[in-house]
View (cartoon, one colour):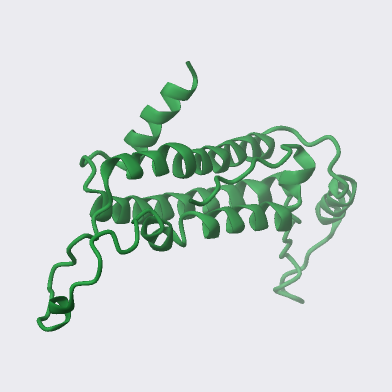
Length: 191
């Protein structure tokens, strides 16, 4: 069985290092969610009934024996899937909080302030140069992080929906949503 993602050390520097943040999310998703079919196949006991030669003589539309026993599915969700989702949720929540907090250590804030004051002082004659009035302020790293968090939350939602639909097909679980099942699991973990 796969192992759940381990939690990185959550610091503002981790969040502002977008390469490390994206790599963590990519590796965590790749290990559990992107390979969900392989992870679920690993839960099946191979050759449980032995080989039946008549199984190759006719075309099988349904895949017998492909549903996974509920106790193994439950264990996979409890021990691997939900803990990985929890770690990614914690990282996304923490970094979203960093993105909405003031950033006193922003190394580019002085440069941005200088550029803003130069732009305000500039005399623009748009008859001579129609493009001279354009000014594109540099975005703060908190704004960039906030945009990244919005995108990553959208990706996470799509990945969880896909993963949950495959689990629903293979595990014949209840028809509750991924968010609801994950919320129930999280509530039991907080006790």
